[in-house]
Image (cartoon, rainbow, N blue to C red):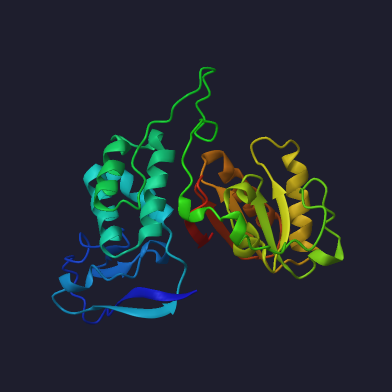
Length: 299
């Protein structure tokens, strides 16, 4: 993709290293006496390092590069301790990168076993800086001891602004163009799948999003599945491989919930792409339990 990314003039760079601590993502290193960009995935293109180069060797240019990956960055940072992680997330907040900020916070909460600090302290600090980040709330287990965040019972109110009065009801049209849609039941050889954009949606997403058809399904072919409760995931894998290799779908959008178990749907699609022999662009959309989009990016 074309995006802004740091460029280094090796003839001007004197290897002083002043840019290194000011690259919060760890994308810069000194190699053989010169600053180098070690990974497109880790450069956010925001240019925090530029003002710290005494020689003016750094610049930001629009070039073809791999998409920035917040998960890769936060994994690299957790070994450096809580303060470095906070500095990085604060950096994202100050530059208005709210989706990356939420993605980083979500990774901390879902991977507590990798941390040597309490993620709750980081999450609360980020929430205080920017309320777009949900405040930390311990997962409440049920009397039967279910500890899975996706199974925890929660109740929330509906905003009055989202309720449509019956007198003002608008009749919406369905964007669904085929049947069946459950992944066990679909036929990958069906003509309507050929050369189309595929939406692989977790079962709960259609009930969570008030505008599922308009926002996600429009102009796409749909299959649905639940990676946690469905059986026969090997069958799902084979059907997805056939949709990619035989039906030649153009792109795949995976629409999943924020709960950790739903991530299995993304992995299933990625495995299918790897085994199909075709490179198909895959986008991951993550919905919160109130229907808001928490992250949206190519994987």
